[in-house]
Amino acid sequence: MATIGQLATRPLKAERNGDKSPASILFLVALWVALSFAVLTLVVLLVTSFMDALPRLDGELFTNYSSQVSPETAGARAAIIGSLWVIVATAVMAIPLGIAAAIYLEEFANPLRWYNRMIEVNLQNLAAVPAIVYGMLTAGLALTIGLRRGVVLAGAIALALLILPVIIITTREALRSVPAEIRQGSLALGATPLQTVWRQTLPSAIPGIATGTILALSRALGEAAPLLLLGGLVFIRYDPNGLFSGFTTLPIQIFNWAGQPQVEFQEVAAAAIIALLGLLLLMNGLAIVIRNRYQRRW
Amino acid sequence: MISTTTTADDAPDASTSASDSSSVAAAPRPQVGASGGTDRYLPEHPTPVIECENVDIYYGAFRAVHDVSLVYGRHEITAMIGPSGCGKSTVLRSLNRMNDLIPGARVTGKISYHGQDMYGSGVDPIEVRRRIGMVFQKPNPFPKSIYDNIAYGPRVTGMKVDSMDDLVEEALRAAALWDEVKDKLKQSAYGLSGGQQQRLCIARTIAVRPEVILMDEPCSALDPIATARIEDLMEDLRKDFTIIIVTHNMQQAARVADRTAFFTAQAAEGTGDRTGQLVEFDLTSKIFSNPADRRTEDYISGRFG
Image (tube, rainbow over all chains, first blue to last red; front, side, top):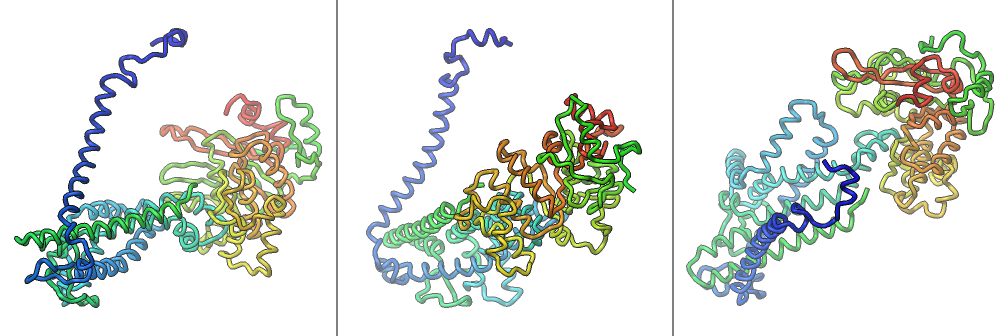
């Protein structure tokens, strides 16, 4: 150990393990390579999809139904409307349930109780369960309650189950980020725990909850596996018009088109991918806007 | 009746003991009813509002506080002082059942409010907190306007209010904040300075008209000027409220408190867990000039803690 006196007389120039040492620079380069690999892959993917999609990115994509006889005029109208139906139904089911569950776990559940701890652990597990398992679960459920599998409601149930753990977890994070002092201040004034949640904690957590929820819905929007398992239709030439209507969604439609041999289908698949991407970007953008607008600094 | 270390030969009269204090050089200059220098007459035994009898407080299996017996007097300021970890905040938070919010927290012994057992069956902690308000260490205004911060309490407790505007003004005046904020009532409370925020929190507490106000180190996050204003305010509030304050700052206790309780932490045999206990409770002038217990004297004269 150098004494303070020795340290003071030593020059302040770089040493072997300093900021500019080979090891530091090598590490930095490795980080850059990792980052550029990820970004480049994404860019290549986007650009090639976009190039393929270019001839088909027109109004027909949004107005025409899919077609087996004339792939050159096939459009994603039914899939886009189907996606909207499914995602809205999913949101209506998953958001209130998820937020309520999160409020219970975060604000009311006693963490010392074993069953609450068990729920806690299992929520994390549920968030990691493969999407297709939720499809199978819903298929079983539909069979039990006599619901046709290939309808909007069944698809929405599967997707709601899929994103429920994510919504619960992000909502809990948002609630947890509200300082305990706010709750205590409210309770110390004689507010009930319920009033405290409704009037203080929940309003303060809205930005975080909205962001997490929208991101979860984005995930649901891009999901194909559970819907395929449920038998989401592939070629439909009508607009889905209710919870019990047959449907297709963009990911299913893309999956189907991409499997067709005709080059026109490949192109329209690429165009649908761009449409789906656009929709996702829109939702994520909305999440960012909400977060920035309502963000609070404590 | 009051089982503290108060001994029989205590000064029977507050004014006597206040003048006694001049003979002790080591202690800061305490006076009863300090800041105004008023020789408030204080009876030897306070008129109890809240009373602790042999109170133990546990967090799970850990005993945080052992055998505290204290009386908090009406229209008095009672200070609880002591080193970190001595349980003074724990005791304070048990006085309006804020401790209930900590999982595993448990109180044994008896804490009574006007003779009613505060932890008895059928007692609603919400009702307790409506009568015994609390101001916290860190100013914690709600992320709302100044007006809504004050109006929140009366609204949630369903107080019958003729004019909310009047109530808000009254509370802000009582907290000596009205003149500074009267033109920006609709602005966010977060725009206020730390000291103003803390006075807002006091105003917010006053607005629900509690009988007792608990203050948990209310000035520890504030600069000396803001601290002085809060101390003046406490002095004024004593007329209408009973105040119990936890403070790290001995001078503060000496300046504002009528009575002072000194706590310390004692290591339990075997476990090494440190349990807080009450060492001495008496008139502030007595505690700071002529403490009965050696440990109190060591603490206030700066020999430990």
